[in-house]
Amino acid sequence: GAAEIRAAVKANGSFGRTGYGVFAAEEDGDAGRSMQLLRGTQSWDSLTLGAQHSRVERPFLDRDAEVTALDARWKPSDQWLVRPLWMHSRSDTAGISQSGNAAGVVADWDVPGPWRQQYFLIYSDARFELNDLGFQDRNDYRYLEWETGYRQDALPPESRFASHSWEGDYIWRENTAGELLQRQVTLQRYSELRSGSNMYFFARWRDAVVDDRLSRGNGSVPRQSGPQFFIEANRPRRGDGHWSFYWNFEISPNHVDGLSYYGGIRPRWHASDRFDVDLGLFAWRQSDWLLWQEGREFGSFSSRRVELFSNLNWFIDDRQELRVKLQAIAIDAEAIAARRLDERGRLVASSAALEDFQLRNLG
Image 1 (cartoon, rainbow, N blue to C red):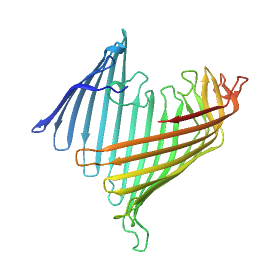
Image 2 (cartoon, rainbow, N blue to C red; image 1 turned 180 degrees about the vertical axis):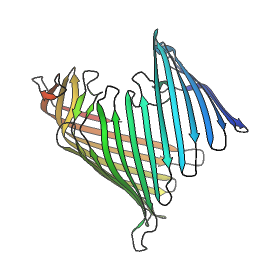
Image 3 (cartoon, one colour; image 1 turned 180 degrees about the horizontal axis):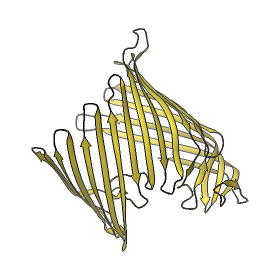
C-alpha cells in the first residue's frame, strides 16, 4: 500500500540538446520502498533518443527490481510521428530471479484536413514486471490497435452543437499462448454544445473471447460476444447559477448470457465559487454475474447494485481547502447457476453448492 515519503529529491534540466532527470525517494515504515530513477535524452532536428533506468528495493518483501527502457521520438515529416519503446525488467524476490521484456511502437499520422490516424503495436512477455515503480494492468499479451478520427467544427449556426469529434477504432489482443483476449470495433463521438455542456457516446461490438485471469490460473474462461453502448452528458454551472449535472447510461454483455445495465445521475450544488457539494445515485443490474468460487468452479448470480456517493469541496482560501467524500454501496446477489470449467474450456453445469449473498458498505 501507499506509504509516507521520508525523503525525496528530484532534478531535471538540459545542456543544449542533452536532457537529464534524476529522482530518488525513501518511504517511511517497515514496508517502505527505496526508489531511484535516472533518465537521459539526446535531441536532433527530427529525432530524440531516450534512455531510462529505475531501481526499487523493498526489504519487507525481500525484493529488489530494476527496469531499463530505451525510447525514441522520430518525426520524419510534418504528418508523421513515430514513437518506439523497448523495456527490460529484472527482479529478485527471496532469492528467486526473473527477467522479462516488452516493446511497442505508436505511430501518429496527421492526415491533411480534419482526419487523423493512429497505430499501436505492443508486446509484453509473461515475465515482464513494471509495478514496483509504475503501473501495468497485465503482462503476457500482443496488442494491435488502429484509430481514425474526424473533427467537425463548421456546424450550422442553428445547431445546438458547436463541434463533434468522431473516432473509430479496431482493437485486437491475444496472450502469448495464442488465446484471443479482446477483439472489438468501436465508433465514438465527443460533442461540445453551444450552451457549454458536453456529451460523449460510443457504440461497440465485442467478439467472443476468453478471460485468462478470472480463474486464478485454472484455465481460460470464455466470454460471450455482444454489443456495448455508453452515453454520458455533463451540464456545467452557468454564470452565477447554483447547479451543474452529470448523468450516464451503459449497456454491455454479461460474461455468459444476457446484458447488464448501468446508469445514474449526479447533481452538484454550488453555494459559491468556493463551496460545492454533489450527490450521485447510480444503479447496476446484471442478470448473469459470473464470479470465481474456487479451482475451476464458478457461480452465476442475478445481481442488483446501488451506489450512493457525495463530495463536499470547500476552498477556504488560497492555501486551505477541505474535502469530504462519502460512498455507500449495496449489492444483492441471487444465486442462479453453479458452473464448472471443463477440460475443453467450456462452462458447464456444476453440482457445487452456491448461496445468495449481500454486501453493505459505507465509507
